[in-house]
Image (cartoon, rainbow, N blue to C red; front, side, top):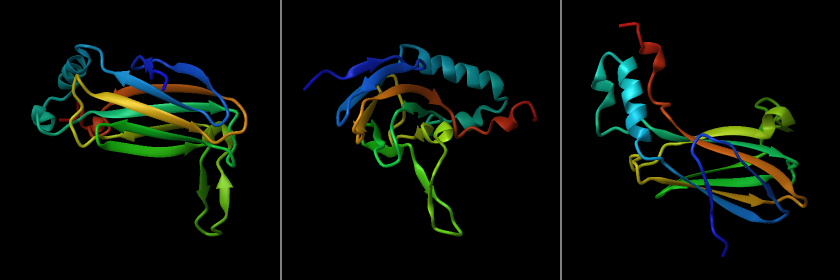
Length: 162
């Protein structure tokens, strides 16, 4: 088994995924990163009660851009942190409510996706996000992958309105 790719948080990792291959990319959190984020957030939130230590305000955000896959031959992606996981595919299709006809989302949208993974365990300095990409394509596709830490649970509208 080959080594996992190591990628840096917040930067696009670009690689080619050969037909039928799979690639695992691991993201680790740089020292001090969560601390810095927490401090930035606290500067913006006047009432720190929403930053209780128990609740995790952080989640992983995984962004993927694929070039060359089709709805019939998509790329399946599994994002995992500890026991928490989330899977999706690109390009994705959606079903229109009224007609129940499956339409493929236009490539401009369908080949780029951003999803959140909010792990059950709080994200900490030791957390590792592992993203596995399985190609169901019969040709090589180019992949751009990025992961960041985001705070979807905070309601930023509250800021400055108190």
